Image 1 (cartoon, rainbow, N blue to C red):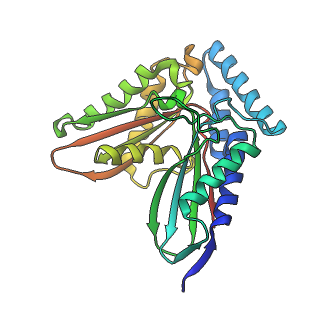
Image 2 (spheres, rainbow, N blue to C red):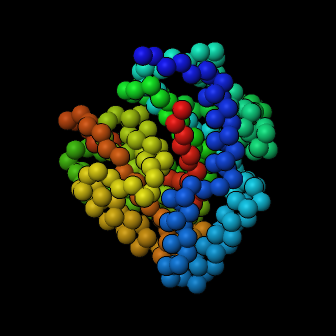
Length: 280
């Protein structure tokens, strides 16, 4: 049986998700952030985390944006092959939702044409990633991405001979060079494998993974733990002012790659790692 979903339902949900994601962090992000605020060893770092914690609480209670940079809307859609969407095209429905969400939520419109820098005035177009899956549902993920941290992201086209140590070095290099510019404490999304563009998408997807969910691979879980410890030993700290909390989490996604390559992408997000999920 084919299930029909009206495109307006997609637009309405995207609108609501854009507004909600920009006003409150997901529960998993709140949990790791508040936990870090209890463990920070630096007095100055603790002061910064306390201020950021207060900011999160005010944003949630008074329903104002967590950050003035309300991001470029990144939208992931997992579309069941037994779903038929009627009305607008899915792309138009998503952009309609973003347009309305950023207007009704009084969110900053930050999207411009790349060279002449003319503002589109409604924060569209969104960056949309599609995946066809089994079933008759549509899973939506909205992840508004600010560019203070986005600009600090890197892709490394390593040689296979660089191996695991080369991968670790690349990730630490990206974080160390980002320093205070990525507005730490950060979440580090890592993609390993695939091709040039696939590893970047893996890294972006990694940022949307619930931090309470661990990787199904014990090998990757250990690598995430090792890298988080190494990153926090860099001493960059909250706001780059020193301390033991440079990163809140390291999430790694992998994909098979070619025998001649070892692509690694590092997509960094500040502590305002916004992501929200819904299933239609």
